[in-house]
Image: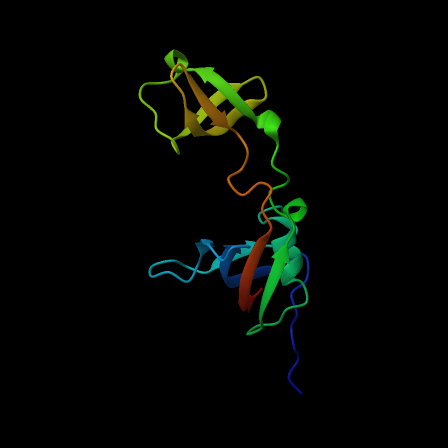
Length: 144
C-alpha cells in the first residue's frame, strides 16, 4: 500500500495559496502568471501561525480553505501605532499610501501614510492586515 505523507512541524512544504479578506477581496496569491508557489519550513516563524497550523496534517494534492483570526495572523489593529507628524518633518512630498521607514530606539519601523492634513501627516505603523480575519485557499504540492 502507498504511504500517505502528512505535513508535520519541521517539514518544508510547497503550497499554492490565495489569501482573501472576509469581503472576498484577494490580497495575495501564488496563482498569478509568473508567481511561484510558496515554499517554507514549518516551525521557524517564516509564516503566520494560523497559516502554518492550517497546513498541518495535509497531504500532497490536498486542498482546503482555512480561516485565520487576527490573533493568529497579524494581530489586532492598535491605535497607539498611529501618529500625527508635522508635514515639514516628512522626507519630501508624500501621498496617502506612501510607505516610509523610520529609525527608532527599537530599530527600524515601517509606516504607511494614512492621511494628509493641512500641517500634519497621519502615519500608521500597523501591518496593513492587522485586525483582519484572513481566509486562505491552500493546495499542498510538495512535502520535504
